[in-house]
Image (tube, rainbow, N blue to C red):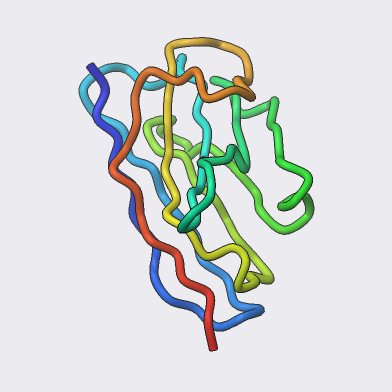
Length: 123
C-alpha cells in the first residue's frame, strides 16, 4: 500500500504562485508514475500533469502548459506541482495519484489517491 498526502494548497490572488507537494509513504515510491488531477465544483476530475518514475518524461494538459511544472524530489518520495500565473479558473481541489508503472499515465487509471488540497484563486 502507498499513502499519499498533498500539501501546499491555499488561497492566492490571480497571477500568484503555489507549489503543491505529494508525499508518499508505505512502499518504495521510486518506480511509481504520478499524476496531478484537479476537480472544480460541478466539473469532472481532470488530469493536469503527470510524470514517469525517473522524472524524465512528463505530460501536461493543454490548459496548463507553460504555467504548471511537475517534478520529482531528489529523494523520489515526493512529487511537486509548481503552479505559476494562477487564474480564477485554476480554482479546484488538487489530487495526486500514483501507480506502480514506469511510464507516464495520461488516464485516470491510478491505483492510489491522496485526499486532495484546495487551491483557491481569487482577489
